[in-house]
Image 1 (cartoon, helix red, strand yellow):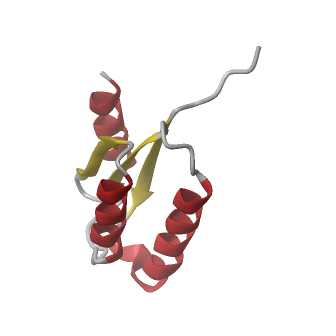
Image 2 (cartoon, rainbow, N blue to C red):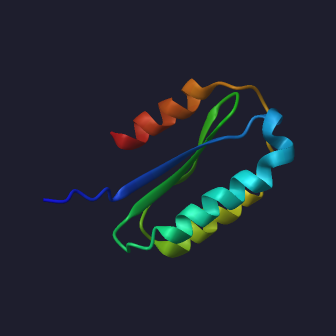
Length: 95
């Protein structure tokens, strides 16, 4: 029996300290998203710095995912490093 994960949550660090590397981070996420081509796979984008933000709720709609990637690309990193804020958003999403 093979188990297949059909949910992928990206919890992405976006504090000011990654400002110079944001496009590298975005490109990494974009490349991963392109590799996950199962139409039943649901994805979500969550970012965190001082606060956590659900940028895109869980969806398998490729148009919504493309829009979520566009929003992710346009983020300007800022704030502190509060990883727990990202995990809180992931936990809420999974309920």
